[in-house]
Image (cartoon, rainbow, N blue to C red):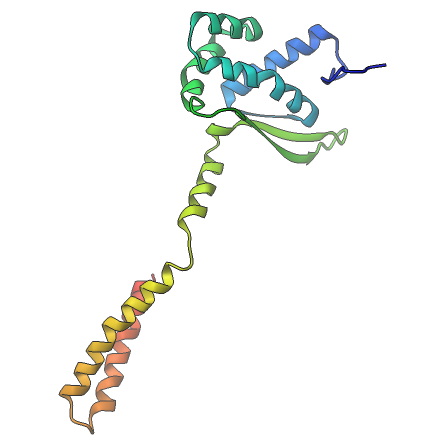
Length: 184
């Protein structure tokens, strides 16, 4: 029975699994996003998140501990340099898994696993949602309408009663192109 054995063995021996997870962690740190199966991505998430937490404190001991897992100097430099600066204020949840569907050959579930702070597309989406509002455009149109109304009233006051409709027509024609120009 496998009571209390909670991690996925991924159909590999322990040494093969550790080597594979270390290689995937190095690739994730260097490239910021990798494509893999969902099962491997979930195992990688449990493997790499404690390493990212360790990297927030740049000390000799934490570098040695992370190096014992990764065994790659370039990845350690990247992790303790650029990556640790970006994730410094984040309390956890450094990675994101985005499912892509199934693989053609064996129908395995495939996904992206990426570092959250390094995805520019997700950052753009959050900015668009916060700045785009439909209510703000309505007050601008209402503010422009009262400004045009006094101009029409002045034209009525200057022209005699017979010529008032004729004076309003050119003013309305001039206002329409101005509103189109504002809309563009």
